[in-house]
Image (tube, rainbow, N blue to C red):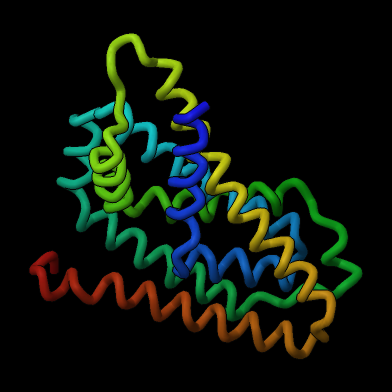
Length: 209
């Protein structure tokens, strides 16, 4: 149980910092409803759990591969964010009646988009490795159950944050009119594009191009 609670705390704190995924889930919760926002957050939670599992088990080969290809992944993540931001700016904000009806395909797209972007940030594995090392956590022979609890806790903690965020955003979003939602859509898209460009700029300085 101790490892489970530690994982919950780590997963929650890893998800809280404001970034493009928080912004995207917030925007989707306001414009498309809490279900879409929460499923978007679950995509990030699964990606966090994937990296947490790699760090906990200590898969040096996977970690090395990701870090060796960090610049390429950073380029992909930046371009992905720019495309996502453009899509957000240009997309039509669903009417209230439409927002209540969410198709499975939309939920799947919401999940995949945040999963792919979060997974394209290999520095997360460095953060997880550092946190686990500082707390003395990690896989040890005969302690497989402890590691399963830790990894499950990371998922639960991250999911808890997305649940809190989307519930609050969905409740607040009911009070916004469609004009305000369109402005939120536009501003969120512009900020996401800016973050994508900001991720790519260092690659030019670093000599990738």
